[in-house]
Image (cartoon, rainbow, N blue to C red; front, side, top):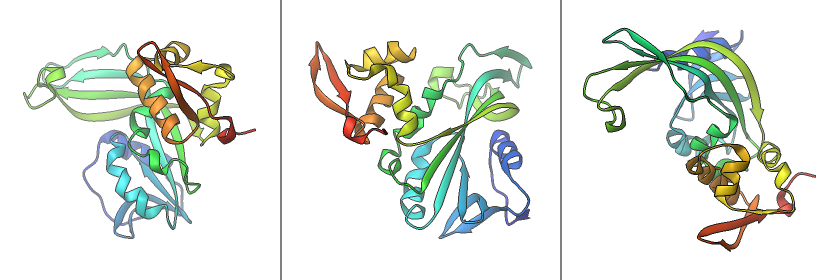
Length: 226
């Protein structure tokens, strides 16, 4: 593999890049002014462990001329390690397929582009935290200083619109709200709102009115896969 440069990245990102790379790949190359994790023939591969908002401008440029695949890890199991006390605990949160929508909300305008593909990696990871007073108020100032890959347990390609449609198969011929989607998929209402937003922005569902105080949606059958 031909390596062009290195840059600041989490251990998780670096480990996935090493795991995913194949002989003949070009690692950390420049394409049209953008740094690319892996160039494999005519495909550009981006490993994005968070913050798809950073990809929006890059995708708008690159998808016009290149096939781009985004690799996104979702932690099935996450250990939290506190560097200052050396304590370690298991997070109760278990990653699910639907967690991809936390990031897809930032790139809805690109999801219908045939040059874009997604692959989800379900992983076991360790999150390193440091009580330095600089972190989020939600964590009382504790910073996340690194994420480490422990294992890759599954890889799932995510297709538009087929993967979206599969999530709603049992809702055919039904009308639904975000609250009902949350119950149907066993996810939080906040995550359900992000999922519904992506489906609505890509015309897979249509807003048809209200049910109580909630927006009511139905499947847009003309845009679904037969």
